[in-house]
Amino acid sequence: MKILLVEDEPKVASFLHKGLTEQTHAVDIATDGVTGLRLALSNPYDLLILDNLLPGLSGLDVCRQVRTQNSSVPILMLTALGETDDKIRGLDAGADDYLVKPFAFQELLARIRALVRRRHEGPTGDTVLRLVDLTLDPSRKLVQRAGQPIQLTAREFALLEYLLRNQGRVVSRVDILEQVWETSFDTGSNVIDVYINFLRKKVDKDFTPKLIHTLVGMGYVMREE
Ligand code: CA
Image (cartoon, rainbow, N blue to C red; front, side, top):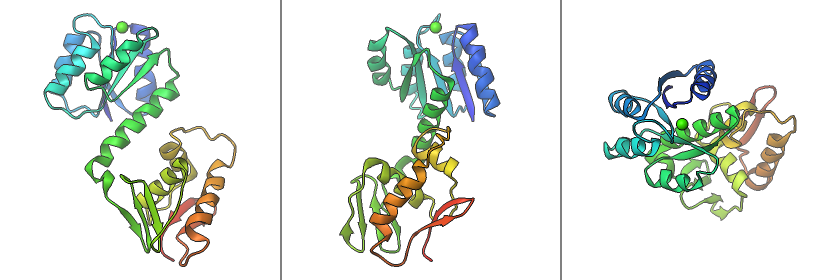
């Protein structure tokens, strides 16, 4: 991904630059709002990370101006502790998310993944997903199998949605942790296996054909077999 980071504190900027570059992102840095805005409007970035308190234009001003150009680029605002009103103003100005400093780098990565995923889902995020006689309606949060409604918890729903969006494709536990739990830490627990079992009981146990399959050592796949 190509990321623009607008941050005037050299230590924070170099720490984030190093971390994001290690994640194979290409990162441009601006240290004031005016330069940040100019770069944001003249390059096709995949993500803007804007500190709020900046020389020149504030991060909020940059955000607002980028949005008036009708850009749909994801924007993550950074605010210092004690600037909580800025959270509201940042979201009003068109930011997609915000992080309060100081934050853990892993937290930043999790937010970035969530923002980029949301964007890629785009307008297709609302179409009903189907496999054989199983349907999942993302906008109405409804799941049915063979016409019978199935009650799922929010996490079960998110997991099933992810598996259905990737039907026919083997997804690893790491994929699931990153995409459904929004973390890349393997907690060492068998949380995913537990949730897969919950889903199987609700979605597969009383029906044929079975749709959720385990590939030992590889992960899971949803398909008709
Ligand atoms: Ca600052």
